[in-house]
Image (cartoon, rainbow over all chains, first blue to last red; front, side, top):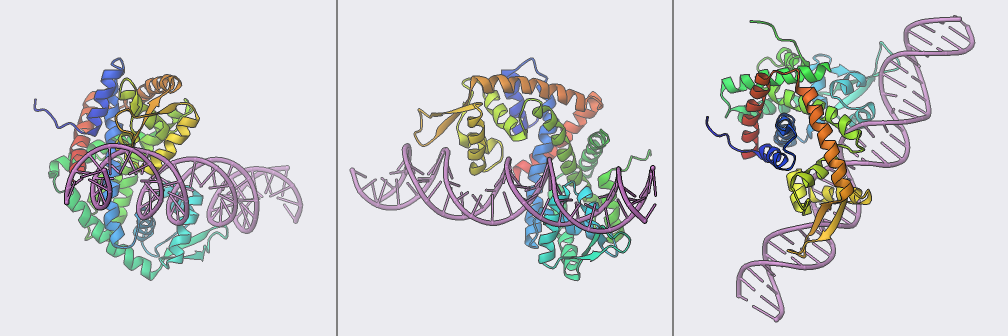
Length: 167
Length: 167
DNA sequence: TAATTATATCTTGAATTCAAGATAAATTTC
DNA sequence: GAAATTTATCTTGAATTCAAGATATAATTA
């Protein structure tokens, strides 16, 4: 069997094997690689977002509104649930995006307790350009993997994600 | 072919397909699942760390010192490089752990510019107990996957991680 | 209808993080 | 050996986040 290249996580697992041989330290590989991959890939994506004057969360909020479809508006509750942040965080995010003129707030005709957040024309134009660049960036990042490798990775991630989402 | 269960990322990809059919939005699946899995798994791990009075980063720092082996000491530079945080963040972390008596700082006999950070006896005992519980927690989390599925996931993650680490 | 409970959002304060720059010691160059 | 550069760490200030609680409206129950 061909040796695989050691990565940062292999080193961690090896250290634990030396220090605590009775532990099943191999188990640390999967969560370790998920965390590290996540940090590295987010860093790469941020570079493209920055070309459009957006950081990660700003892209996330605008993209969530954009892909919701016309009228490109959602209640804050829908936004923070989707994006896995607290309501306080969302308030803060919306304040910043509103000040920049990328979103606007309107009253919700169906529920006076809630507001609706909508993309402005400027916000719409910006996120549409940014998401085009984003998918081109993803093509670059993933292109070294074969079609088959991408499929295998996606299938495997699907299993662990559904496991994590259920529990 | 059997239909797979839709997850949160499938919904996002589907929305983009409706709104921007010309984009290759399938590409969003892999980074989306990595990010979401990472957030969910970290949340699960934190629960175990909390049983030992530790949050994620406190566990990380103590574990890094522990697995380095005797004398369980490293320079701050080694710590923040390994843990992918800035030096300022590490200063802050070390201050907190020192105050709690889990680490101590000593002069570095080999380089007067740097300090050495070492586990105290108390820190050593705590992280050893916590890491035992941590691996038991990982067993619980991963046990619904077959041995084979775990291997496939790990292989696939290895490929993407080495890709991301190289670039 | 009045009181209670649930829902939606915002406010506040503390914790965590980073970027940029300050400080201090070691190393290299002249 | 003095000056310049590099290395290691810490300090500061701003940004981001969350938890807890405040506020306001809606829905439910008595």
